[in-house]
Amino acid sequence: MRLALDKFYAFLDRPLFMRSRLLLLLLVVPLALTMTQPLWRIAMTAPQYPDGLYLEIYAHKIDGGNHGQHINEINTLNHYIGMHKIDRAELSDLDWLPFALGLLILLTLRCAAIGNVRALVDLVVVGGYIGAFAFGRFVYKLYVFGHNLDPSAPIKLEPFTPAIFGTKRIANFTTSSNPQLGSVYIGIFFVGLVGVLLWHLIAGRREAMRPTAPSAASALGSAS
Image (cartoon, rainbow, N blue to C red; front, side, top):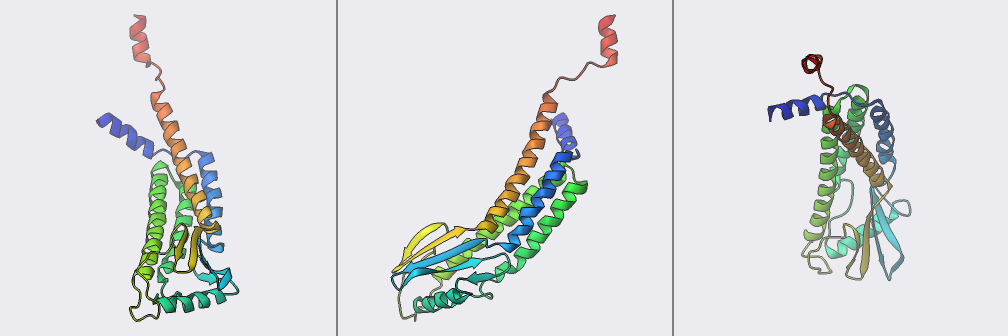
Protein backbone atom coordinates (compact mmCIF):
# COMPACT_ATOMS: atom_id res chain seq x y z
CA MET A 1 0.00 0.00 0.00
CA ARG A 2 2.81 2.39 0.91
CA LEU A 3 4.59 1.68 -2.37
CA ALA A 4 1.40 2.39 -4.33
CA LEU A 5 0.92 5.73 -2.55
CA ASP A 6 4.53 6.70 -3.18
CA LYS A 7 4.09 5.97 -6.89
CA PHE A 8 0.85 7.97 -6.96
CA TYR A 9 2.43 11.01 -5.30
CA ALA A 10 5.43 10.76 -7.61
CA PHE A 11 3.01 10.71 -10.57
CA LEU A 12 1.27 13.87 -9.30
CA ASP A 13 4.61 15.67 -9.12
CA ARG A 14 5.53 14.88 -12.71
CA PRO A 15 5.86 17.85 -15.08
CA LEU A 16 3.35 18.09 -17.89
CA PHE A 17 4.21 17.04 -21.43
CA MET A 18 5.11 19.91 -23.73
CA ARG A 19 2.17 19.03 -25.95
CA SER A 20 -0.12 19.21 -22.92
CA ARG A 21 1.15 22.69 -22.14
CA LEU A 22 0.49 23.83 -25.70
CA LEU A 23 -3.00 22.34 -25.60
CA LEU A 24 -3.75 24.13 -22.34
CA LEU A 25 -2.73 27.40 -23.97
CA LEU A 26 -5.11 26.69 -26.84
CA LEU A 27 -7.94 25.90 -24.41
CA VAL A 28 -7.70 29.43 -23.04
CA VAL A 29 -9.12 30.70 -26.36
CA PRO A 30 -12.62 29.12 -26.12
CA LEU A 31 -12.72 29.99 -22.42
CA ALA A 32 -12.08 33.68 -23.22
CA LEU A 33 -14.62 33.59 -26.08
CA THR A 34 -17.26 32.49 -23.57
CA MET A 35 -17.59 36.14 -22.52
CA THR A 36 -18.62 37.14 -26.05
CA GLN A 37 -21.44 34.64 -26.60
CA PRO A 38 -24.71 33.80 -24.81
CA LEU A 39 -24.66 30.83 -22.47
CA TRP A 40 -28.39 30.10 -22.65
CA ARG A 41 -31.49 31.16 -24.58
CA ILE A 42 -35.05 31.05 -23.28
CA ALA A 43 -37.74 31.60 -25.91
CA MET A 44 -41.52 31.49 -25.99
CA THR A 45 -44.20 31.46 -28.66
CA ALA A 46 -47.98 31.91 -28.48
CA PRO A 47 -50.84 32.72 -30.87
CA GLN A 48 -50.43 36.43 -30.09
CA TYR A 49 -46.65 36.14 -30.58
CA PRO A 50 -46.21 33.94 -33.65
CA ASP A 51 -42.65 35.17 -34.22
CA GLY A 52 -41.77 34.42 -30.60
CA LEU A 53 -39.97 36.26 -27.82
CA TYR A 54 -36.59 35.36 -26.41
CA LEU A 55 -33.94 36.40 -23.95
CA GLU A 56 -30.31 35.36 -23.87
CA ILE A 57 -28.18 34.91 -20.75
CA TYR A 58 -24.54 35.89 -21.00
CA ALA A 59 -21.83 35.47 -18.38
CA HIS A 60 -22.15 39.18 -17.53
CA LYS A 61 -25.60 40.33 -18.72
CA ILE A 62 -29.00 39.38 -20.07
CA ASP A 63 -30.17 40.50 -23.49
CA GLY A 64 -33.38 40.17 -25.46
CA GLY A 65 -34.54 40.18 -29.02
CA ASN A 66 -35.50 43.35 -30.86
CA HIS A 67 -32.78 45.35 -29.07
CA GLY A 68 -33.96 44.26 -25.65
CA GLN A 69 -37.66 44.93 -26.25
CA HIS A 70 -38.48 41.23 -25.89
CA ILE A 71 -37.46 41.35 -22.22
CA ASN A 72 -40.01 44.11 -21.60
CA GLU A 73 -42.68 42.05 -23.36
CA ILE A 74 -41.80 38.94 -21.33
CA ASN A 75 -41.92 40.93 -18.08
CA THR A 76 -45.35 42.28 -19.01
CA LEU A 77 -46.61 38.75 -19.57
CA ASN A 78 -44.96 37.53 -16.36
CA HIS A 79 -46.75 40.28 -14.44
CA TYR A 80 -50.13 38.77 -15.35
CA ILE A 81 -49.20 35.42 -13.82
CA GLY A 82 -47.42 36.94 -10.82
CA MET A 83 -43.86 36.02 -11.76
CA HIS A 84 -40.95 38.20 -10.66
CA LYS A 85 -39.60 40.72 -13.12
CA ILE A 86 -36.58 39.48 -15.05
CA ASP A 87 -33.85 42.08 -14.73
CA ARG A 88 -30.21 42.42 -13.77
CA ALA A 89 -31.04 42.66 -10.06
CA GLU A 90 -32.96 39.38 -10.10
CA LEU A 91 -30.06 37.71 -11.87
CA SER A 92 -27.33 39.11 -9.63
CA ASP A 93 -25.87 35.59 -9.53
CA LEU A 94 -24.25 36.47 -12.85
CA ASP A 95 -21.95 38.94 -11.07
CA TRP A 96 -19.46 36.26 -10.04
CA LEU A 97 -19.27 34.48 -13.40
CA PRO A 98 -16.81 36.86 -15.14
CA PHE A 99 -14.49 36.61 -12.13
CA ALA A 100 -14.76 32.81 -12.15
CA LEU A 101 -13.94 32.67 -15.86
CA GLY A 102 -11.01 35.03 -15.32
CA LEU A 103 -9.76 32.82 -12.48
CA LEU A 104 -9.95 29.74 -14.72
CA ILE A 105 -7.99 31.55 -17.43
CA LEU A 106 -5.25 32.50 -14.96
CA LEU A 107 -5.09 28.99 -13.47
CA THR A 108 -4.91 27.46 -16.93
CA LEU A 109 -2.07 29.77 -17.99
CA ARG A 110 -0.21 29.03 -14.75
CA CYS A 111 -0.67 25.28 -15.24
CA ALA A 112 0.61 25.54 -18.83
CA ALA A 113 3.67 27.52 -17.74
CA ILE A 114 4.87 25.89 -14.51
CA GLY A 115 2.29 23.25 -13.63
CA ASN A 116 2.57 19.53 -13.03
CA VAL A 117 -0.01 16.75 -12.95
CA ARG A 118 -1.11 17.85 -9.47
CA ALA A 119 -1.88 21.36 -10.73
CA LEU A 120 -3.78 19.85 -13.67
CA VAL A 121 -5.94 17.77 -11.31
CA ASP A 122 -6.67 20.90 -9.26
CA LEU A 123 -7.64 22.78 -12.42
CA VAL A 124 -10.05 20.03 -13.48
CA VAL A 125 -11.65 19.98 -10.02
CA VAL A 126 -12.01 23.78 -9.82
CA GLY A 127 -13.40 23.96 -13.38
CA GLY A 128 -15.89 21.18 -12.69
CA TYR A 129 -17.02 22.82 -9.46
CA ILE A 130 -17.56 26.22 -11.11
CA GLY A 131 -19.53 24.66 -13.96
CA ALA A 132 -21.70 22.52 -11.67
CA PHE A 133 -22.34 25.41 -9.27
CA ALA A 134 -23.29 27.82 -12.08
CA PHE A 135 -25.71 25.34 -13.65
CA GLY A 136 -27.17 24.45 -10.25
CA ARG A 137 -27.84 28.12 -9.48
CA PHE A 138 -29.45 28.53 -12.91
CA VAL A 139 -31.84 25.64 -12.25
CA TYR A 140 -32.58 26.98 -8.76
CA LYS A 141 -33.36 30.44 -10.14
CA LEU A 142 -35.80 28.99 -12.66
CA TYR A 143 -37.47 27.03 -9.87
CA VAL A 144 -37.80 30.17 -7.72
CA PHE A 145 -39.22 32.19 -10.62
CA GLY A 146 -41.93 29.59 -11.25
CA HIS A 147 -42.82 28.80 -7.63
CA ASN A 148 -42.86 32.27 -6.01
CA LEU A 149 -45.91 33.53 -7.87
CA ASP A 150 -47.89 36.51 -6.60
CA PRO A 151 -51.24 35.11 -5.33
CA SER A 152 -52.98 38.39 -6.28
CA ALA A 153 -51.96 38.09 -9.95
CA PRO A 154 -54.82 38.41 -12.50
CA ILE A 155 -54.11 34.95 -13.96
CA LYS A 156 -53.86 32.03 -11.55
CA LEU A 157 -51.40 29.27 -12.37
CA GLU A 158 -50.16 26.31 -10.39
CA PRO A 159 -46.50 26.73 -9.39
CA PHE A 160 -44.21 25.36 -12.08
CA THR A 161 -40.57 25.07 -13.10
CA PRO A 162 -39.85 26.68 -16.48
CA ALA A 163 -38.18 24.57 -19.13
CA ILE A 164 -34.51 23.88 -18.41
CA PHE A 165 -33.77 21.79 -21.50
CA GLY A 166 -36.07 21.48 -24.49
CA THR A 167 -39.67 22.71 -24.64
CA LYS A 168 -42.52 22.98 -22.18
CA ARG A 169 -46.08 24.28 -22.47
CA ILE A 170 -47.29 26.77 -19.86
CA ALA A 171 -50.84 28.06 -20.34
CA ASN A 172 -51.04 29.05 -24.02
CA PHE A 173 -47.28 29.60 -24.31
CA THR A 174 -44.71 27.11 -25.52
CA THR A 175 -41.36 27.85 -23.94
CA SER A 176 -38.00 26.46 -24.94
CA SER A 177 -34.67 26.60 -23.14
CA ASN A 178 -31.38 25.56 -24.71
CA PRO A 179 -27.63 26.10 -24.27
CA GLN A 180 -25.91 28.45 -26.69
CA LEU A 181 -22.42 28.95 -28.08
CA GLY A 182 -21.00 30.23 -24.78
CA SER A 183 -21.88 26.94 -23.11
CA VAL A 184 -20.35 25.07 -26.05
CA TYR A 185 -17.09 26.96 -25.50
CA ILE A 186 -17.11 26.00 -21.81
CA GLY A 187 -17.77 22.39 -22.81
CA ILE A 188 -14.81 22.42 -25.20
CA PHE A 189 -12.58 23.79 -22.45
CA PHE A 190 -13.62 21.20 -19.87
CA VAL A 191 -13.51 18.24 -22.27
CA GLY A 192 -10.03 19.36 -23.31
CA LEU A 193 -8.90 19.52 -19.67
CA VAL A 194 -10.21 16.03 -18.94
CA GLY A 195 -8.58 14.77 -22.14
CA VAL A 196 -5.17 16.12 -21.10
CA LEU A 197 -5.53 14.56 -17.66
CA LEU A 198 -6.54 11.18 -19.11
CA TRP A 199 -3.57 11.34 -21.47
CA HIS A 200 -1.22 11.68 -18.50
CA LEU A 201 -3.02 8.94 -16.56
CA ILE A 202 -2.71 6.51 -19.47
CA ALA A 203 0.95 7.41 -20.02
CA GLY A 204 1.68 6.96 -16.31
CA ARG A 205 -0.07 3.59 -16.22
CA ARG A 206 1.84 2.33 -19.25
CA GLU A 207 5.12 3.39 -17.69
CA ALA A 208 4.22 1.68 -14.41
CA MET A 209 3.44 -1.56 -16.25
CA ARG A 210 6.65 -1.43 -18.28
CA PRO A 211 9.16 -4.03 -17.01
CA THR A 212 12.17 -2.45 -15.41
CA ALA A 213 15.68 -3.40 -16.54
CA PRO A 214 17.63 -5.59 -14.08
CA SER A 215 20.11 -3.71 -11.92
CA ALA A 216 23.84 -4.14 -12.33
CA ALA A 217 24.14 -5.99 -9.03
CA SER A 218 21.47 -8.52 -9.95
CA ALA A 219 23.07 -9.01 -13.37
CA LEU A 220 26.45 -9.78 -11.77
CA GLY A 221 24.78 -12.19 -9.37
CA SER A 222 23.15 -14.02 -12.23
CA ALA A 223 26.45 -14.26 -14.08
CA SER A 224 28.24 -15.83 -11.10
